Image (cartoon, rainbow, N blue to C red; front, side, top):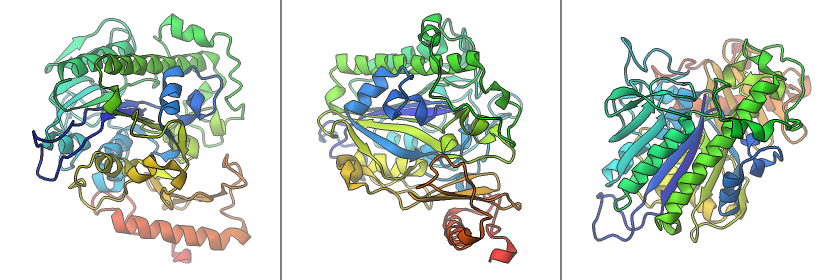
Length: 463
């Protein structure tokens, strides 16, 4: 259900004591997140069929991360991790928020967490959110956002959609991606003289696969979609996966991505026109990946039972761009997890670390300045329900605490995760070593009451 894009101006001279009027230029931050957009859907990530000229240009003008991963392959908990720097087994959201967005059961689902917007507001930023929220109680502003234009649920029609604006439900006119973009530009124009943090969270390319403008769909009328794997249905596939091979759904999905690209282009163009581009950092990413035939699935982690944690469901696009401050056209190949975003951005902006509790992430700000360092994490971790994942550059293990099936992949020889080695006897030592490392990491960071697994990472025979 999800995707992410950040634009931020460089912050200089802001210390731990909060805003200082004598400081040099302050940061403006525009954080744009897409929904269900895999890294494979961008031309600059190697898909020649994708029409993403704006995002490709941002990558050419900045730093592209080739190994950025969500911490869970489903929307609400992934967003919570991006915004807080804390994993689902810390903030407590483990699946998409269904009933708590509006109505009798509405509630804000992470009231005890510190979000990136909270931190920046404390340092003098005006904070605005336009698009998808999906962390509960959509009708009221949260997390220090004072500008609140959001869709009420986790998904929405693309034409004439309902949104929450100025404390009430209103009906927009036309294409929702364009309306979100309009409000983003309005916010930038209204706050151009003060530091701002704008979160732009497009609901595209999430379902429904209808309602996208004909000029966007027409871009793919003759597309052979040769970039999409033609595989048999996965034996774990859930009900949505029959969309595989459905040309209409593929056209709509790619059209939605083209609409995002067009919207980002309008935002960046307005920033340029206002003279903000020289001190503007741009980050583009998604809340999690997505499969449209990859592995014989259509969807993300919940496209299968048991839930999958394939790279395709986890890997997200992420681009950092700030003209004059970051190198152009560089690729950072180090491992980067969603929980690294908060420490990276705050460090880059020269702000104090987040006051959030027991954060597992680390700053990659130095690596953005020199992508050739190839620094990155030694391993990235993910979870979904009672499944846990550890991924290094060479190996990937998925352990399911309820008894399996476990999955082990040699990514050097099998980057598509097609050959499961978990039950191959000669790989048992490797599997146990990774599982032990996985257990130790979650034992360090997971918190009682938020962790659905506890100390059950290893089955008794392997302890």
